[in-house]
Image (cartoon, rainbow, N blue to C red; front, side, top):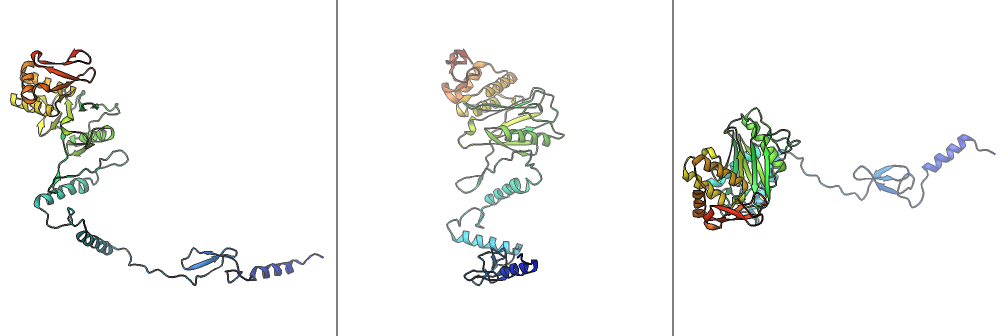
Length: 336
């Protein structure tokens, strides 16, 4: 005989509400599981929740406020002063005037100075490079600079970064080129464009904009400052100039023989005249009317007979032949 519907419902309700021996749930005897609420358990079968008798409440600290942050900072300083790092620069208050000035320059350059000047979506920001001397003073890592003197470019302007054995990087005034830069409405905008391009593509240096100037730092400690060549080709006028070691590398700024001697000394700091350096020195000789014989004499006075010149044809090192006032490349058998 078929069971009446209301009787079947009563029986199922009784089964659902009845408990079984050995279970965890006080309602149905089902297995327990952690609840979503701290300090409570939940039944796997009926989802009933009850307080966990074994729960131990954890003590919460004070809410996070700026006062709490200040307390944590003070605690950190006390730990630093009492530990092995007690003499870290910036922890001790007894800093020299030069050290404090260095820290202020660092803050202005990398904290306050970068506010509103960096677009993470479009620009490559250079890493923070810090160097200290033996007295914990900050050392300037800038090795050269490029300055926008005027913003009236007429085409043909080009920046070259060159390193013997690593090749030459070209950055031209050409918006259609991948490594080209554009002219902005102001010299500062143009300097910003050049800085962005160099940081994106250069394997030799990092660039940092400082007003209308671009300051350059070597990317690797394995690279030598004296070997890096910074050359600017500005055929139309004095719109952009390069500087290295505090000396202008613009041929039009060379007015005396002694100026030329200083530039030759900078170029020969690594004992090698690169193709870009050779072109720059040639333009300076044209400016001053210096012939090849006098040029070789100056080279010999600075570096002797061992000054090398990088061959423009094959990249090998050509040797100096003073009697011919020229360099000869043995690899491609040609005069440089």
